[in-house]
Structure formats: structure tokens, C-alpha cells
Image 1 (cartoon, helix red, strand yellow):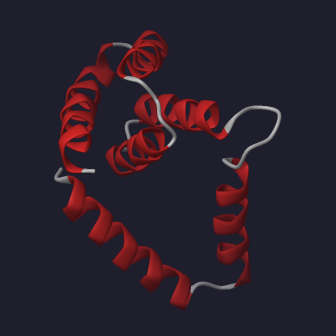
Image 2 (cartoon, rainbow, N blue to C red; image 1 turned 120 degrees about the horizontal axis):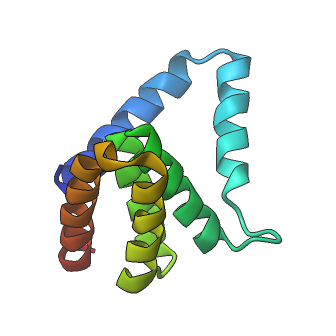
Image 3 (cartoon, one colour; image 1 turned 90 degrees about the horizontal axis):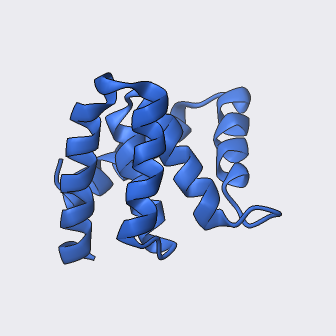
Length: 113
């Protein structure tokens, strides 16, 4: 997935979703946003945790989102590779296609942003 295409589509669909959302959906979106803010754990480490969970759950949209956030938080490639290794160990070989796409997206992030 191309970085700019992903970002534009996500923004458009999130706006549409929130325009139609009831109170509980809006609350969930707010809870999700709040979960990744600085706290006892850094936002950077929380994003890496979100990335691992997304890879194990095999959600490419979530993987791209967390890769964007990791990049913005200053995650280094070595840190990213360690986190993705955890996802591979926890999720098993079914994670490999997502690992491949994640590396391609990360590579594009490095040249796009």
C-alpha cells in the first residue's frame, strides 16, 4: 500500500465514520486515541506494542497506521525489527506476508515523509 494513498483513504473514511457515529462509537475512538498518549510507557513504545498486536491480528490497515505513528515517534529500524520479530514469534509464520508488506511500507515511509 502506498503511504499517501493509505493516509488519504484513512482520513476520508474516519471522517465519514465519525460523522455517522453514535456516542458509543465516538467514545471508542476517543479511548483508542487516549491509549497511545505519553504515560508511564512512552507513546513510542505504545505504538510498537500496537504494531505487534496489529501484526499478530493480521490487520494491514492497523499495521500501516502504527508504522506511520512509529515513524513519527522516531522509532529506529533496529527497534522496529525487534518489535516485528516479537510479532513473528507470537503470531507464527502466518505473520510473514504482513511482515513483508510492513517492511515495504516502512521503506516507503523512509523516502516519503
